[in-house]
Image (tube, rainbow, N blue to C red; front, top):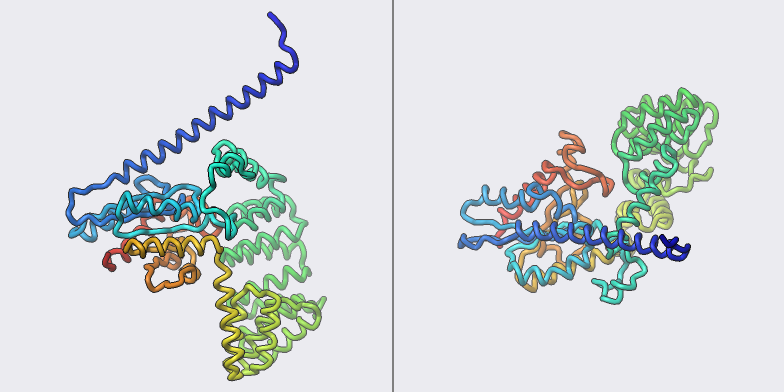
Length: 474
């Protein structure tokens, strides 16, 4: 048998890799065809009923996935039970991983095919990577020669996502891994990592502080206090641990305990900026405005010239009706964080108190611009095009906010929000999570504060949408 040369072996290896990738790509593409085939079968129209109301649902994986428990399928069942005088047919055109420009691009074709009586859209979560001015859809040349081919070829996307997932698991159990999860809104995973880290590294105070931060962001105050008390056993005089404990007790309105930890911290460093700031918060919460003013001024004077200190000082001045000082403090806060509308809102009261109508109007205009710019420009543009398409075809548009999120920022996406029907899913999901638990409602937390819904979560979503549909007229 003739022995292969080195070049032949290299060529055989490369061809083998290519054929393996090609085979995997074919499998993934076939899986996609099966998914859309099943979806098309479920979406087949039933025209036997003379009063059929057709509802077109568009979105990404939060709409597409779940089969018979996906929210569009459950919505159809609920509507047909609630309104027997109509026959409702809900069409699920959700596509996992899709962005809003692609949804808008496909919509005219869906309208021509299905002639819907309503369009329901829950979308936007996949738009974070896009900027204004990019093409709505890739051209054929872009498809073949894109600098980011993983977006279009399933095998390359799988390799890319595997690489991203691997990055998250480097230095297993380390602070760096926990901070990665924290910065990406994956709080449940961050908690697990920091719990393990503090157990294995009890002498590193930063691990305790990071774990307490995640607990606090999640509203888990008891757990945050408990972990900081553990830290206090290791570091009984650590001023950051003491002030963080005091801050937590302030937020839970347990002022005597907050005072205890602040007094303990003050024994070693009474002029610590964080200590002075936290003391100011306590005095403000207790209504001791003069003491709050003094503490916050001192905190700023010794270097705590942060947004939070200036904002709270501005609020103290407002409560004292010192409108000039309030305006000055809040304008400094605005300069530090020009994208935070909190200080703009407070500054409006200062200008109102000064009877400065020009200043009030200017501040109001800046605030509105901040709120407008806060939305992803691509997402905003897509929502406006979606609305234009719906109005052009005389179809009512229902915009569904994601679970746990406020609906107001979504309304600001539209030039004429009064002509759009909005579904607010913040309180109903918060209540469900509080009473039933996060895992009963969501299968994951890919978006930080929410994730893909369980059948129960999709049921809540469908019931909330059904309530609006039943009470409106197509």
